[in-house]
Length: 91
Image (cartoon, rainbow, N blue to C red; front, side, top):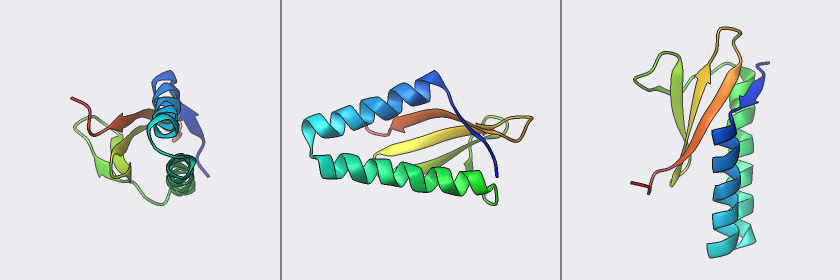
């Protein structure tokens, strides 16, 4: 099982998305986002799947929910480094 490391940017993005959902939508949408993230992280921990490659070495992306893409990197120790939870609606 692979270790998951969170960059500060990924942590900030994650909590900002939750805060946005709670502010503009409902607790149900925030809970859905949290559950989807947990499912993706569980898949990544298993280490059996890599997702769509980006233009950067050992860096991949996966859509968590329609509006949010997770970017992650696999380091030399075979750990998953979460880089960003990017809001696809941003400029």
